[in-house]
Image 1 (cartoon, rainbow, N blue to C red):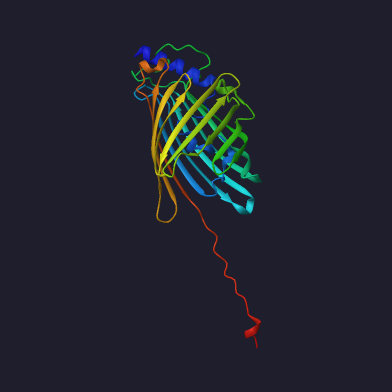
Image 2: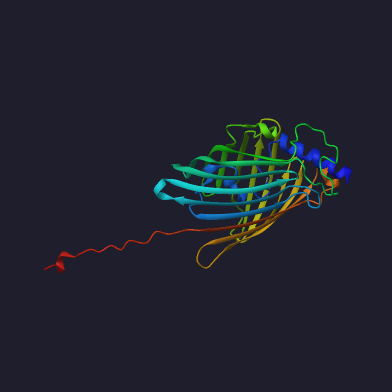
Length: 314
Protein backbone atom coordinates (compact mmCIF):
# COMPACT_ATOMS: atom_id res chain seq x y z
CA UNK A 1 0.00 0.00 0.00
CA UNK A 2 2.84 2.41 0.79
CA UNK A 3 4.27 1.76 -2.67
CA UNK A 4 0.89 2.48 -4.23
CA UNK A 5 0.53 5.75 -2.33
CA UNK A 6 4.05 6.78 -3.27
CA UNK A 7 3.39 6.16 -6.96
CA UNK A 8 0.12 8.08 -6.67
CA UNK A 9 1.86 11.03 -5.02
CA UNK A 10 4.40 11.23 -7.83
CA UNK A 11 1.63 10.83 -10.40
CA UNK A 12 -0.35 13.73 -8.93
CA UNK A 13 2.80 15.83 -8.85
CA UNK A 14 3.40 15.06 -12.52
CA UNK A 15 -0.19 15.96 -13.34
CA UNK A 16 0.16 19.34 -11.65
CA UNK A 17 3.45 20.05 -13.45
CA UNK A 18 1.81 19.24 -16.78
CA UNK A 19 -1.09 21.55 -15.93
CA UNK A 20 -3.83 18.96 -15.98
CA UNK A 21 -6.34 21.53 -14.83
CA UNK A 22 -7.63 20.61 -18.27
CA UNK A 23 -8.79 16.98 -18.09
CA UNK A 24 -7.56 14.32 -20.48
CA UNK A 25 -9.98 12.52 -22.81
CA UNK A 26 -9.28 9.73 -25.29
CA UNK A 27 -12.39 10.51 -27.37
CA UNK A 28 -11.23 14.07 -27.98
CA UNK A 29 -12.38 14.03 -31.63
CA UNK A 30 -16.02 13.97 -30.45
CA UNK A 31 -15.48 16.49 -27.65
CA UNK A 32 -13.81 19.41 -29.39
CA UNK A 33 -15.58 22.22 -27.52
CA UNK A 34 -13.57 21.26 -24.43
CA UNK A 35 -10.35 22.26 -26.20
CA UNK A 36 -11.39 25.10 -28.49
CA UNK A 37 -14.24 27.63 -27.99
CA UNK A 38 -14.16 28.44 -31.72
CA UNK A 39 -15.71 25.00 -32.35
CA UNK A 40 -19.07 26.14 -30.93
CA UNK A 41 -21.86 25.81 -33.48
CA UNK A 42 -19.66 24.76 -36.41
CA UNK A 43 -21.64 21.54 -36.81
CA UNK A 44 -24.67 23.74 -37.65
CA UNK A 45 -26.68 21.79 -35.07
CA UNK A 46 -27.55 21.73 -31.38
CA UNK A 47 -25.38 19.11 -29.69
CA UNK A 48 -25.15 17.82 -26.12
CA UNK A 49 -22.15 15.71 -25.05
CA UNK A 50 -21.66 13.75 -21.82
CA UNK A 51 -18.37 12.05 -20.91
CA UNK A 52 -17.19 10.02 -17.95
CA UNK A 53 -13.56 8.93 -17.60
CA UNK A 54 -12.30 6.47 -15.00
CA UNK A 55 -8.52 6.70 -15.25
CA UNK A 56 -6.10 4.02 -14.03
CA UNK A 57 -8.80 1.56 -12.96
CA UNK A 58 -8.13 -0.05 -9.54
CA UNK A 59 -5.51 2.59 -8.73
CA UNK A 60 -6.40 4.17 -5.33
CA UNK A 61 -7.13 7.89 -5.61
CA UNK A 62 -6.81 7.87 -9.42
CA UNK A 63 -8.49 10.57 -11.57
CA UNK A 64 -12.22 10.42 -12.24
CA UNK A 65 -13.68 13.02 -14.58
CA UNK A 66 -17.22 13.92 -15.60
CA UNK A 67 -18.06 16.46 -18.30
CA UNK A 68 -21.22 17.87 -19.86
CA UNK A 69 -21.20 20.29 -22.78
CA UNK A 70 -23.82 21.85 -25.05
CA UNK A 71 -23.25 23.93 -28.17
CA UNK A 72 -25.53 25.37 -30.83
CA UNK A 73 -25.45 27.32 -34.07
CA UNK A 74 -27.41 30.57 -33.79
CA UNK A 75 -27.70 32.50 -37.09
CA UNK A 76 -28.83 35.73 -35.41
CA UNK A 77 -25.48 36.09 -33.63
CA UNK A 78 -23.48 35.05 -36.72
CA UNK A 79 -22.00 32.04 -34.99
CA UNK A 80 -22.41 29.63 -32.11
CA UNK A 81 -22.61 29.41 -28.33
CA UNK A 82 -21.30 26.67 -26.07
CA UNK A 83 -21.43 25.73 -22.39
CA UNK A 84 -19.12 23.26 -20.63
CA UNK A 85 -19.35 22.00 -17.04
CA UNK A 86 -16.70 19.66 -15.60
CA UNK A 87 -15.68 17.93 -12.38
CA UNK A 88 -12.23 16.32 -12.05
CA UNK A 89 -11.13 14.43 -8.91
CA UNK A 90 -7.50 13.34 -8.37
CA UNK A 91 -6.76 12.02 -4.91
CA UNK A 92 -7.00 14.96 -2.51
CA UNK A 93 -7.30 17.52 -5.36
CA UNK A 94 -10.55 18.50 -7.06
CA UNK A 95 -11.19 20.83 -10.00
CA UNK A 96 -14.58 22.23 -11.03
CA UNK A 97 -15.30 24.65 -13.81
CA UNK A 98 -18.12 26.10 -15.87
CA UNK A 99 -17.35 28.11 -18.99
CA UNK A 100 -19.35 29.83 -21.72
CA UNK A 101 -17.98 30.01 -25.28
CA UNK A 102 -18.83 32.19 -28.27
CA UNK A 103 -17.63 31.56 -31.81
CA UNK A 104 -17.98 34.05 -34.67
CA UNK A 105 -18.32 32.21 -38.00
CA UNK A 106 -16.58 33.66 -41.03
CA UNK A 107 -17.05 31.92 -44.42
CA UNK A 108 -13.67 31.37 -46.10
CA UNK A 109 -13.30 29.31 -49.27
CA UNK A 110 -15.10 25.95 -48.99
CA UNK A 111 -15.38 26.14 -45.20
CA UNK A 112 -16.03 28.18 -42.08
CA UNK A 113 -13.48 29.88 -39.82
CA UNK A 114 -14.58 30.08 -36.21
CA UNK A 115 -13.07 32.81 -34.03
CA UNK A 116 -13.77 31.88 -30.43
CA UNK A 117 -13.54 33.25 -26.91
CA UNK A 118 -14.54 31.59 -23.64
CA UNK A 119 -14.89 32.77 -20.07
CA UNK A 120 -16.02 31.18 -16.85
CA UNK A 121 -15.19 30.21 -13.30
CA UNK A 122 -12.66 27.64 -12.17
CA UNK A 123 -12.51 26.26 -8.63
CA UNK A 124 -9.53 24.37 -7.24
CA UNK A 125 -9.86 22.48 -3.95
CA UNK A 126 -7.31 20.51 -1.95
CA UNK A 127 -8.03 18.45 1.13
CA UNK A 128 -4.77 18.23 3.06
CA UNK A 129 -6.38 15.71 5.42
CA UNK A 130 -7.25 13.34 2.58
CA UNK A 131 -7.91 9.81 3.85
CA UNK A 132 -5.68 7.34 2.03
CA UNK A 133 -7.01 3.92 0.87
CA UNK A 134 -5.38 2.20 3.86
CA UNK A 135 -7.45 4.36 6.23
CA UNK A 136 -4.69 6.76 7.31
CA UNK A 137 -4.61 10.50 6.67
CA UNK A 138 -1.84 12.41 4.96
CA UNK A 139 -0.77 13.71 8.36
CA UNK A 140 -0.58 10.19 9.75
CA UNK A 141 1.58 9.22 6.78
CA UNK A 142 4.10 11.86 7.92
CA UNK A 143 3.80 13.92 4.74
CA UNK A 144 5.78 17.07 5.52
CA UNK A 145 5.61 18.79 2.12
CA UNK A 146 4.87 22.43 2.95
CA UNK A 147 3.20 22.90 -0.44
CA UNK A 148 0.30 20.70 0.73
CA UNK A 149 -2.05 22.85 2.85
CA UNK A 150 -3.40 21.62 6.16
CA UNK A 151 -7.09 20.85 6.11
CA UNK A 152 -9.50 21.59 3.25
CA UNK A 153 -8.97 24.79 1.24
CA UNK A 154 -10.39 26.03 -2.06
CA UNK A 155 -10.22 29.02 -4.36
CA UNK A 156 -12.44 30.20 -7.23
CA UNK A 157 -11.09 32.36 -10.06
CA UNK A 158 -12.34 33.82 -13.33
CA UNK A 159 -10.73 32.14 -16.33
CA UNK A 160 -10.45 33.01 -20.03
CA UNK A 161 -9.47 31.11 -23.20
CA UNK A 162 -9.55 31.62 -26.97
CA UNK A 163 -8.99 29.90 -30.30
CA UNK A 164 -9.38 29.62 -34.06
CA UNK A 165 -11.10 26.69 -35.79
CA UNK A 166 -11.49 25.99 -39.53
CA UNK A 167 -13.76 23.29 -40.89
CA UNK A 168 -14.94 22.03 -44.27
CA UNK A 169 -17.04 19.01 -45.24
CA UNK A 170 -13.98 16.75 -44.95
CA UNK A 171 -11.38 18.56 -42.83
CA UNK A 172 -11.07 20.41 -39.53
CA UNK A 173 -8.16 22.08 -37.75
CA UNK A 174 -7.88 24.39 -34.80
CA UNK A 175 -5.45 26.11 -32.45
CA UNK A 176 -6.39 27.37 -29.01
CA UNK A 177 -5.25 28.21 -25.52
CA UNK A 178 -6.93 27.81 -22.15
CA UNK A 179 -6.12 29.67 -18.90
CA UNK A 180 -4.77 32.72 -20.70
CA UNK A 181 -4.28 34.78 -17.48
CA UNK A 182 -2.06 31.97 -16.05
CA UNK A 183 -3.03 32.83 -12.49
CA UNK A 184 -1.34 31.86 -9.24
CA UNK A 185 -3.63 30.52 -6.52
CA UNK A 186 -1.50 31.53 -3.57
CA UNK A 187 -3.41 29.85 -0.75
CA UNK A 188 -3.07 26.52 -2.62
CA UNK A 189 0.55 26.98 -3.76
CA UNK A 190 -0.79 26.26 -7.22
CA UNK A 191 -0.50 27.79 -10.69
CA UNK A 192 -3.22 27.49 -13.31
CA UNK A 193 -0.83 27.16 -16.23
CA UNK A 194 -1.62 28.37 -19.72
CA UNK A 195 -2.18 25.35 -22.00
CA UNK A 196 -1.95 25.30 -25.80
CA UNK A 197 -3.79 22.94 -28.15
CA UNK A 198 -3.65 21.93 -31.79
CA UNK A 199 -6.44 19.69 -33.05
CA UNK A 200 -6.97 18.40 -36.59
CA UNK A 201 -8.75 15.62 -38.45
CA UNK A 202 -9.81 14.44 -41.90
CA UNK A 203 -12.64 12.30 -43.28
CA UNK A 204 -11.40 10.10 -46.13
CA UNK A 205 -13.87 7.97 -48.11
CA UNK A 206 -12.47 4.58 -49.09
CA UNK A 207 -15.73 3.37 -50.64
CA UNK A 208 -19.47 4.01 -50.36
CA UNK A 209 -19.43 1.90 -47.18
CA UNK A 210 -16.09 2.65 -45.52
CA UNK A 211 -14.50 5.86 -44.26
CA UNK A 212 -11.19 6.50 -42.53
CA UNK A 213 -10.95 9.29 -39.96
CA UNK A 214 -7.38 10.17 -38.88
CA UNK A 215 -6.98 12.85 -36.20
CA UNK A 216 -4.36 14.38 -33.95
CA UNK A 217 -4.36 16.31 -30.68
CA UNK A 218 -1.29 18.16 -29.41
CA UNK A 219 -1.35 19.73 -25.95
CA UNK A 220 1.45 21.72 -24.42
CA UNK A 221 2.40 24.02 -21.57
CA UNK A 222 5.49 24.99 -23.63
CA UNK A 223 7.35 22.13 -21.94
CA UNK A 224 6.46 19.28 -21.81
CA UNK A 225 4.27 18.51 -24.83
CA UNK A 226 1.95 15.53 -25.26
CA UNK A 227 0.40 14.16 -28.46
CA UNK A 228 -2.47 11.81 -29.33
CA UNK A 229 -2.55 10.26 -32.83
CA UNK A 230 -5.72 8.38 -33.80
CA UNK A 231 -7.23 6.43 -36.67
CA UNK A 232 -10.89 5.42 -36.85
CA UNK A 233 -12.60 3.25 -39.47
CA UNK A 234 -16.33 3.79 -39.98
CA UNK A 235 -18.76 1.43 -41.74
CA UNK A 236 -21.95 2.72 -43.35
CA UNK A 237 -21.55 5.87 -41.20
CA UNK A 238 -23.01 3.84 -38.34
CA UNK A 239 -20.34 1.74 -36.62
CA UNK A 240 -16.75 2.75 -35.99
CA UNK A 241 -13.66 1.32 -34.35
CA UNK A 242 -10.04 2.34 -34.17
CA UNK A 243 -6.87 2.89 -32.22
CA UNK A 244 -5.05 5.84 -30.73
CA UNK A 245 -1.55 6.29 -29.37
CA UNK A 246 -0.71 8.78 -26.65
CA UNK A 247 3.05 9.18 -26.73
CA UNK A 248 4.84 7.73 -23.66
CA UNK A 249 1.49 7.11 -21.95
CA UNK A 250 -1.04 4.72 -23.52
CA UNK A 251 -2.42 2.78 -26.46
CA UNK A 252 -6.18 3.30 -26.79
CA UNK A 253 -8.88 1.12 -28.37
CA UNK A 254 -12.04 2.95 -29.47
CA UNK A 255 -15.43 1.65 -30.60
CA UNK A 256 -18.81 3.24 -31.06
CA UNK A 257 -22.21 3.61 -32.71
CA UNK A 258 -23.28 6.62 -34.75
CA UNK A 259 -27.03 6.28 -35.30
CA UNK A 260 -29.43 8.55 -37.20
CA UNK A 261 -32.90 8.52 -35.68
CA UNK A 262 -36.19 8.69 -37.56
CA UNK A 263 -36.59 12.42 -36.84
CA UNK A 264 -33.22 13.18 -38.44
CA UNK A 265 -31.35 13.67 -35.17
CA UNK A 266 -28.12 11.84 -34.42
CA UNK A 267 -27.10 9.72 -31.41
CA UNK A 268 -23.49 8.70 -30.77
CA UNK A 269 -22.42 6.16 -28.14
CA UNK A 270 -18.68 5.68 -27.70
CA UNK A 271 -16.36 3.63 -25.51
CA UNK A 272 -12.58 3.70 -25.18
CA UNK A 273 -10.08 1.70 -23.19
CA UNK A 274 -6.54 2.90 -22.53
CA UNK A 275 -3.77 0.36 -22.01
CA UNK A 276 -1.15 2.13 -19.92
CA UNK A 277 2.38 1.95 -21.36
CA UNK A 278 4.14 4.07 -18.72
CA UNK A 279 5.54 2.84 -15.39
CA UNK A 280 2.02 3.14 -13.93
CA UNK A 281 1.04 -0.10 -15.69
CA UNK A 282 2.40 -1.97 -12.64
CA UNK A 283 -0.58 -0.74 -10.61
CA UNK A 284 -3.10 0.39 -13.23
CA UNK A 285 -5.56 -1.87 -15.04
CA UNK A 286 -6.09 0.71 -17.75
CA UNK A 287 -8.56 3.56 -18.25
CA UNK A 288 -12.20 3.44 -19.31
CA UNK A 289 -14.17 6.24 -20.93
CA UNK A 290 -17.84 6.43 -21.95
CA UNK A 291 -19.31 9.03 -24.30
CA UNK A 292 -22.90 9.97 -25.17
CA UNK A 293 -23.62 12.64 -27.77
CA UNK A 294 -26.93 13.79 -29.22
CA UNK A 295 -27.32 16.31 -32.06
CA UNK A 296 -30.34 17.72 -33.85
CA UNK A 297 -31.10 20.59 -36.20
CA UNK A 298 -33.96 23.06 -36.01
CA UNK A 299 -35.01 23.79 -39.56
CA UNK A 300 -36.64 27.20 -40.06
CA UNK A 301 -40.24 26.97 -41.29
CA UNK A 302 -40.66 27.28 -45.03
CA UNK A 303 -42.28 30.58 -45.92
CA UNK A 304 -45.23 30.15 -48.19
CA UNK A 305 -45.30 32.56 -51.09
CA UNK A 306 -48.46 33.68 -52.88
CA UNK A 307 -48.57 35.26 -56.33
CA UNK A 308 -51.48 36.76 -58.18
CA UNK A 309 -51.92 36.28 -61.89
CA UNK A 310 -53.09 39.50 -63.56
CA UNK A 311 -55.10 37.45 -66.01
CA UNK A 312 -57.53 36.55 -63.23
CA UNK A 313 -57.63 39.91 -61.46
CA UNK A 314 -60.86 41.95 -61.68
